Length: 549
Ligand code: ATP
Ligand code: MG
Ligand code: MG
Image (cartoon, rainbow, N blue to C red; front, side, top):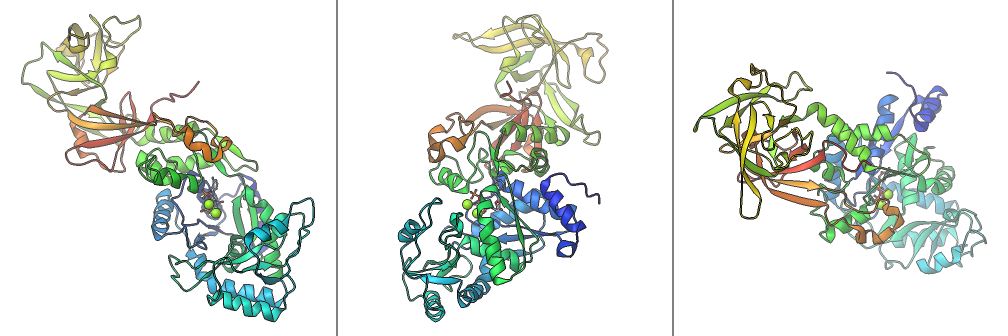
């Protein structure tokens, strides 16, 4: 395999391999906390971690960073595994930080024995106040110089459940005057009498992120520990634990997190949308979650291509959601089966077509894929067409229907509009046409040339369906500007339901996970809410970018 670095992380890995660091080994990990469903930002991290290992002949662990029992759940663990697999990746080992609780405890004891950790009886507020601010040295805790024996005893009793939540913490003894606030005697353990989704009631003390995450990397002998930019200030502490404990020297590298326009990305905020029923669930097709995108009709390839296309940045940036939509359009154009669906139907009667006659037409499934074959589409005297494809007073160059105008019905015949019927409110209720019998697609001998082709469905064969059209979740472009106020910017039109849609009968056979192009309309997929009685489709994306300026 060719190893031409495509970004700065690949460059680092390439150099490490060349210099023989870690014996030329590459081992990455994807470390989700199972406290929510994965989103497109996680997909970026997944593609990066698994991609690096793939490219450089290494391995990737899937490690659940499950050190906070209160917010974590096995439902999330299962969804995370399903999403990573769906994206097309397979992990070397399925691991849990909670499996290391014994080892982490032992490492903490070692630090205490070295005089590098102590039990503090102060409240978290007192501790925070003493840390002060970066411009002046912090204040040392009155418990900072406890003897090793006393610390060992207290820490063991913390573990044994002798103290209440918050009564004591274990802190690393680093430097209360350090310019980096994360180095001012950070917390290593806290008491939390909560049931853990895997270890149950075995533990009532839980390790903090900086200690647990870095040391989990070392336990797994991870060579390149990749995380997002906001953790660069944690790196000195990451390195401090490794140095003081003399554990495997994993290295942390940071890249810019992915932010998308018109949405929020953090699990905490996505959970709010779910809990407050602003969306129907984690897999609501408007959500930037992997499960939401999947339900919406995005393909794994389109998401992987997107992650590739946006590159790996060193500075925070905001990616236009239009780039993601471009990627899915590009993929679906290649693979989606073309079908006909009329979203806003009006009846068209072909007055010179024999009553009761039905023809079966062969229509190509996908002109982009020569192997995709043809399907049968029934044609009869009465069809439905899109209301917008008829105009009573058409402007010049309207290559669709209007009084006296001719158009081709896709895969069928050329028709000419002879007349139309209106109701008492002035709405068109019926269009009357004649057809040219010699103009059948594939065997057209009529010699007539028309500029427009429109889609249609046979009235007696059409199947009713509901179509859900999605728009941006937030009216606001950059949600980072508004923080927790993001809910004030929910787009009231983010979901439109079309419930008079008529689709061609082949779609009775539509299956979940398959993509369709409703020709001239966009890309759609069957929704899980579909039943035998009622077909429900989601619009993945329109054919063109409606938001393009
Ligand atoms: P959130 O704030 O959404 O909960 P998180 O970073 O707390 O995100 P984790 O489950 O801890 O979520 O993340 C697992 C991995 O995914 C981490 O390595 C994290 O850096 C990465 N990650 C999370 N969000 C993004 C993002 N928006 N862009 C790139 N990587 C991300
Ligand atoms: Mg995290
Ligand atoms: Mg988080």
